[in-house]
Image (tube, rainbow, N blue to C red; front, side, top):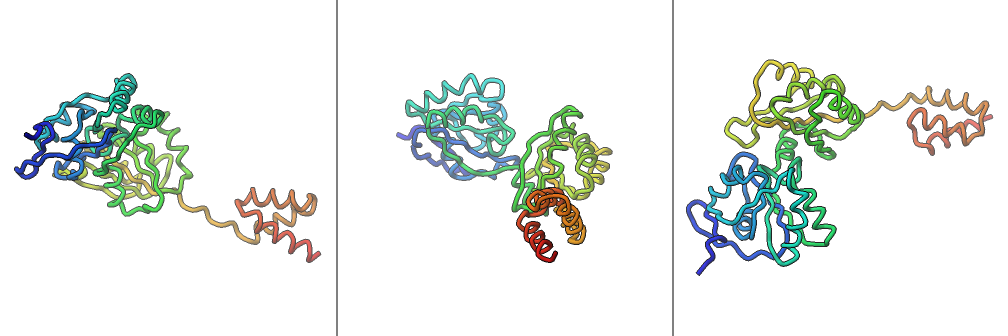
Length: 295
């Protein structure tokens, strides 16, 4: 007779999940729409000996929806370090355990890192079960470059620390992705406009849910827009990276090179001009040789 704890239901049909190999399974869950879950994720959650949940009450909505009755334990920022060794011991003894967050892919601004690190240090198996991610969902609809991007999670809540964090990113050329709570959205957008300037950005709200919406504009425009409205649901903010610096004019750096060569050795003059104008040293060196040979 089948073990009921390994069952899951899909569209009213009962399925029995296959047996899992020992290890920790990092399972992505929907970020809003319960249908955004994979068959493999359902099999894993149904077959796991324990499902570690950021909040068991929140996860109950998903697990009960699919008829998954297995054992659930809370793993959150307040207890994850204390529980890491205990969980690692269970996996070492042959247990298959699943880890989920309240929504999306675990560890992305969610608990789980101390546990994964503890397992890695003991060379215990960890398996990713990919799926929904708020940052990727927002990134692909933003209309901003995706060939290079950086995820920075939540900005610091205090104004001064937030400004300092953004200042460190001012020259980053990759697309920037942030999470933000509705009550801090206005302040974060205003800080971004102040520090990062007139860049294009997108604010995505309640992704995959019934009232999903996104707003595009400059950071200043978005800051003004959200200063006058109440926001519900966590936001994803996608911001264009810094513009490529314009190349220095040839006549400017060549003139500087001539002056530097007049009272310095060639190597020192090349180093000074390359550093000052942000040029490749070989380019400046070749120009210096040309000038020297023309004397």
